[in-house]
Length: 385
Image 1 (cartoon, rainbow, N blue to C red):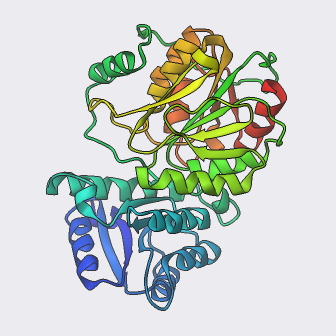
Image 2: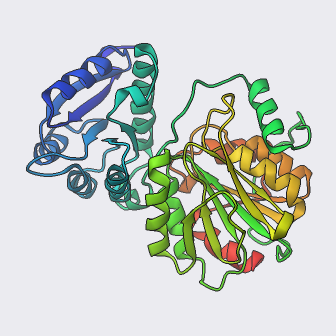
């Protein structure tokens, strides 16, 4: 790649050692170059304004100005994609969620041994994530940035083969065989549709961009909604409890991190715990099962796993909604659900931070509705109440 085409990165961190470590990894990648470093949030804001980088890496705890405040100032003055570095603790989760709400796109752990098992895998994970975050800059504007914050990405294992993953999904959820055929994607999907009052559970799957998208959705669902909702958000285990608590404060519905054995209660929202797999069961009035993840599954929690269980136990009485996120997690589970008579909606491209997950179900002809983010909450209430 030509030197002039490299993505220009600003590294903001108060640790000189960490600055050098991150800079060395970034500069070793032919796609990227570090154009400057900053040792606190205030300096980071000033250099962002002066240098106009393509992407910024940002520490969360620094002197003079912390990372969250710096992100907020950058988004107000010169919106730029930001990748946060965070600790995988409850307090780190709370601060990182503040940063995502302020406009950061994604985050990675500062504990590099938690990111990857080898040096080569670490380099690839970090540089790929920086490139992915930078790519969102093409969609960001000062007027829309608040609605386009990022998703805590779940800890990912090395991607397994498609056949191994499909096998794991079927065995983990005891689901039926997945069809290999996919219809052409509809060009347009009407917002009008059949009533879904027969639906007994709503399952929402998302990754990058999910926390902000979910906040928008739940602000638009009245408190008298009468169906249980399950959220599968790619997120580490230390983050899901903090995220559930945050979402609980923003909606009149009750939101909690799902626990093994929880009963599916009307109007209750359950957030799948990070690092584990969630399945739902219709027996005994409907319940949630949490278990360790199969090594062949790349995401923990996986949208595919949750939807496969919904297909088996709820069939036509389940509604799945696939929101913004990288990759295609959710497509295979959505296919199973549709084959069982269930309903699948997808977020439209214009309102997504990353269109990967919704695009996968749309291109496979699985989605019966393609909706702007702002319409999803009202549509859930109007059709499934």
